[in-house]
Length: 299
Image (cartoon, rainbow, N blue to C red; front, side):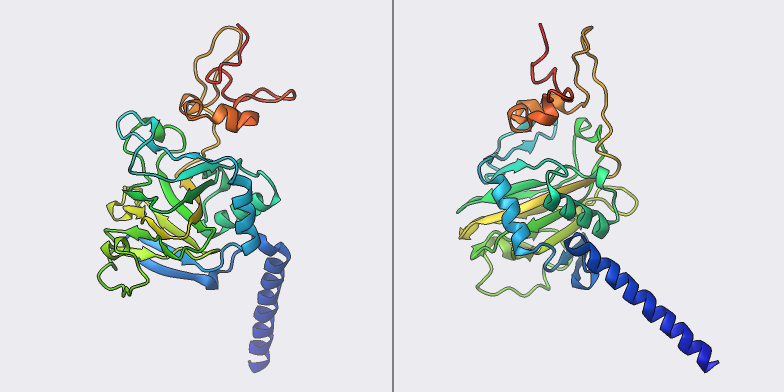
């Protein structure tokens, strides 16, 4: 019996070694569950220490630095993207699988969340300078238009690309642990109004906007406190309840000029035709998905 037990333990140990070796062979594309800390159950929120390397953080900033535009918010009634003093940062969207580094990060996010890559939006890079903020809001949608493609956003992965000397915390005003979290003079006054997470370069915050039964979670209310000293860089990945890839055809003209995605007019309105021409307009090899909204069709 002892001999069989030893054989079983040896087999389990060999399996563990194989799993570790497999993870190591994937390199930066894998994630380490031992680095994940549960922050709250209401909302469901988790922190992964060292999710990104310094080099990956710097790479994402370099991709975005010269392409930043004023951040927008979705109007609750129309669903259109509009400017608002509620959100004063600057940002831009990367292309999905834009390069090897971005692809590895997207795969790592999928492995951590157990949600398929096609359910995710493109990664958005955000830059907050002194005094800039994003007041508390929900990531799930209040309008039907934005729910048409992919449904509600079920989860958000927020990756911190830089340290912040003071301020810039992510705050959850309705979180269950807000009264239990100790705060000293290194926290901003804003961060004292709820459960807060300090930006640390390389860390990633995962929280869910929906309950397990797919109803919206009002405890997921969150915001970005104003930056007091330094500047804040972050990368956000929103993930939907179903595929965000599936194009929904829009009525087009008889010459075949049409939009292949219901969000094309919205994207065009915020300048994506110029910022993301390969997808929106197309190339010599293939037409884009938003040619009608980008007004590049033959007259």
